[in-house]
Length: 613
Ligand code: ADP
Image 1 (cartoon, rainbow, N blue to C red):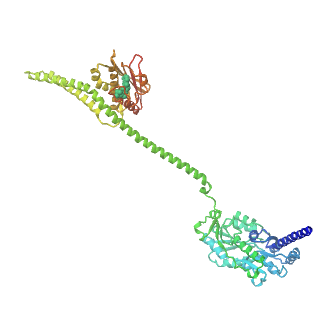
Image 2 (cartoon, rainbow, N blue to C red; image 1 turned 90 degrees about the vertical axis):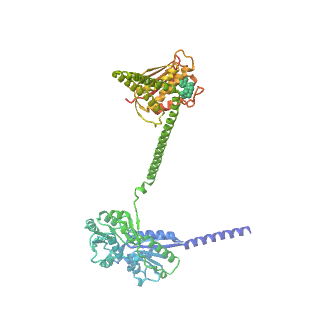
Image 3 (cartoon, protein in one colour; image 1 turned 180 degrees about the vertical axis):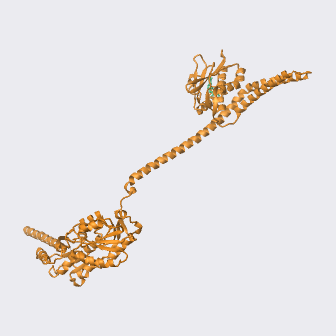
């Protein structure tokens, strides 16, 4: 029982395998492709390649493809045809192909001529053949056709639209039987352009001679490339050699009718699309392989596809894109600077933007700083003025004293003058002297008032050249009476040279007054034996230096670091703003200030300002 089951299983497996291989054999199809001149003659070479690719894509079956070339099509001699048919027959003896595909007119003509002997029962598709080159009446029911329709008048019109100055069109065409048929056909279409443009034909010449002509064409010429399979001397040109050679020497733009020639040498225009026709051929082939009646599968002839142009050729011949027919496609556009260096350009632009942002940020910052500086100067000026008001309070006695003196003298002089005038013959000389004295005293009094007013004037920060020695002298004059009233002697030792500095005279005078009053305050704090404030000026390199020292108790060492801070004070009634204002004013003048204690006791303040010259 067990044995029987095994035998049955082996039988079942072998039957399955047999069925599979039978199915596989049934699924493989054999296709014979017949080429017109050879596998690599343009444009049919491109059609063959593209049809094979499309067949591979569309066929549900595995395809075995044989390629055969109709070498005899190159020559006007039908004799070898019978032998070629016999050869194909022998090659496929007992195992005929499932489909024959002929590519190009010579192949189509060959199969039509030999149809009765050439696998008569096998379906056939004639493709890449111009409809004028197919004998439609003699197609067998087994034949299908994918025909194309050339439209040379449209090609010529396009040339004239693109280059309206064109005077002549040179038609490059070979001399094989097929090419000579086309010479006559093109001639008929060219005749439609009589009077508009001249057509030149060189098919009686070798291709070498045609190249020479095309290298030296007169201006306003265009070349229409038809075919160059075989030239007048019988030389065959495979691949793209001939078109390339023409392109290298031609001094006029080359046009054509089939995009099998497009891609390097040809300007473009409305042309047949190898892709479109190959796709259609493959579709028809698959339908025939699937068993459809060939006579029922005969699509209408395919015309030109929408125009397309080679950008490089348009550039070379100066053809503006505005002249192209509407809907044209422009290919092979070389990338411009933007496309080529896009990322670099973007990077540089980004750097520029960041830089511009930084610069504008910095400019904005600078402006803000300026505004802030101006504001702070105004504040300083206001603060300094407030500080001066308080200084004037301290100076009141000094001012009163300074005013009293000239006013008293004036009064005395006036009284003396009155007495003199009562005399019978007053002494004019003496009177004159008295009047002069009165005037001098009056000037002294008004000078005191001027100084006082200028101290209290609300003036903006005004920069002018100042003689430092004189400025210090005036400040000392103002505080002299204060010093006198507090029994402090004020010594002034100006350097014997002009110390020119740049600044606001009122503010600098305030510096001097503040420092002197502080020194007087310090001396009065203790019962010093020697009560003296010494003021001196000197030149220290490029700086003018003002030193104010006193015989007071000096500054507490722990306070030395803070005395210039706002609101730092050791005085019961002090505000602690005097030195802060002094420091701000000095620094606003580009100078510096320092404080120290003298070895013999007392404090020393040194102000340094840049000298102008
Ligand atoms: P204020 O006079 O209102 O106190 P200042 O800013 O002018 O404010 O002075 C700050 C402090 O510096 C004073 O309180 C004092 O302690 C100290 N100071 C200033 N000048 C002298 C000086 N010549 N000798 C000793 N101490 C001084």
